[in-house]
Length: 316
Image 1 (tube, helix red, strand yellow):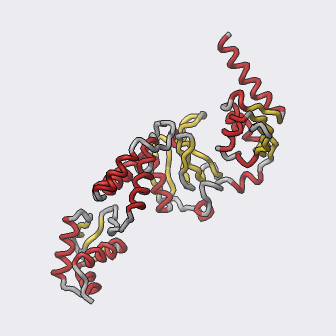
Image 2 (image 1 turned 120 degrees about the horizontal axis):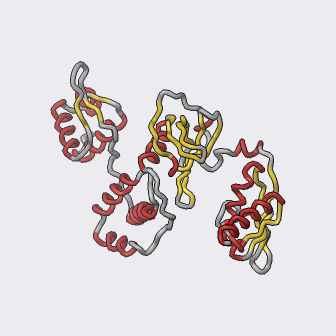
Image 3 (image 1 turned 90 degrees about the vertical axis):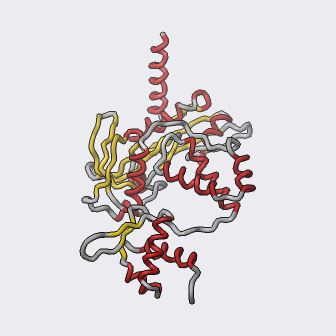
């Protein structure tokens, strides 16, 4: 069956996307066309922006540049609006692992939409937002980590912590954002253990293909990246008395299912936390101020009292 030229070009894009390299005779045989027609089609795709370049020397042929082009995809109006809104909602993040790509995709979506759909989207601008505190981070480092996850590669990073600057070889589990910060849970080959790295403390990041990645790391997600280790840790019960405002704050956190509610809207939260990380969780609760009172354990109460004393000393 003969294909229309437009159909043939779309199929050609799909075929060359799937190949690392190809020759004109190979494509001519696959499509049942002359080499002249295939050469003309490749030239037309190149003129349309498909990044094809010729390989000189023995063997010859063609290759795609580093980034491949996807074939046209048909979206309904509702799908196009959803995609536009999803990209727009990211604009309040200080850094993104795909900021330039998202902006370019957004421009393409908007440019080719019908006038009435553009008008609907224009009404959404500055009407709906997902707020995120602005944090300064390297988009380049985030992109490198995201690429490492996609191609299954280790990454060498320069990391700044309270102990100074160190160079680490890590295999990222993934990326997630919280309170405006990006976090990268990863396996650290130097520590031979899983660690959580904060994006703004990564000074530099480069792919390290010389390190063999671990299958176990691939099988973890950002939701359960340290679950096996947490199960082995000794835990203590953290009990927190909450005002109604404190309850609302807890409900929006990962501790939402730990609350025993009272009729007036207040409640008490019972959380099992690793003893070694107690200060971390206490500091989170400290941020709720007078809306949260730690009842136990005694070590957590003493930790809060010491913080209060230090602040009092500043103002005396």
